[in-house]
Image 1 (cartoon, helix red, strand yellow):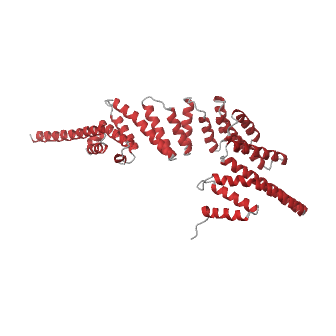
Image 2 (cartoon, one colour):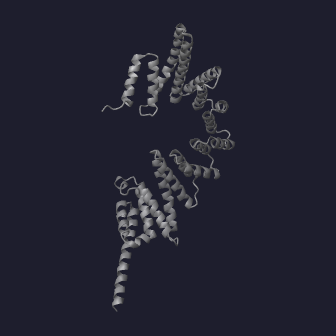
Length: 405
């Protein structure tokens, strides 16, 4: 008899706990539907104080839905209710799906996952805008996985995941996802550019070239792929091949300053290469000068072209200076050296307006700002412009001088 009474009492307590649990879940759902997120959160937390709730698919689904609403709410009083609400929503929905073995909640779960995919994607966008590439990549890929689980293949989201992984230098994931997109025949020439860029970053110029060739076979008119091919040739020192590719690109897009800049950089590299003859280097210098000027004519704020043209003239002056110095040592002809100095200074003075213009364009917090300032310090020192030298040295000390202890 005692055993029967004990069993009845136990069942009564169990039923009471179960009813309390269900009541908290119902209240959580009711307040969720009314937009009372803080109250909904309190009720679902109360429900999860019971051990049995851990095995309740409906409770996990409700919990996930509440976290999703907190993640997307625009109401200030609800925004900070839960940390990492997107991640927690994802975990809760996964748990609900795992526990729903009989598919009793399949329609509700499908609807929740549809919303979750969008919520996770938007969180990825937030991280992407903050340049937190790895978190952005992970979230984009998770959004892709969620959509894939209910039969939707979102190649654009997968591309975003791969791009963010590439920017975050997670090259293995980036390559894997780009290859998946190629197999899906995702219509995007940038896939091949990115695969080539990754191969270059890993030091594999042969593979980088193969990716570009494959891309150009599929997208023969893509200027981006042509531009990338030229960059590979420039990097590997194949100047003639780079010139041929860039000439093709310029014919197709004559108003593109980037192409003229690339052509200028190509000849610039040749002009500095002492393995070429004097005639070849002089030809390359003239071609680089013309190409940079064309880029600037098309875009008078083009920092790279403006700065590079200034450096081109400065380096030409250095070359003439070294030749004059060597000649003086051999001949002791000081009169000729004075004439040489005039020519050298004329070339350096050509560099000056471009380097000064580069300084005007670039912001002090740009990593290249110091390089521009140092270039001007060297130029003013060599041309004996003492007032300008003093000014630029003060700027250098202001931004880059060591703190005095």
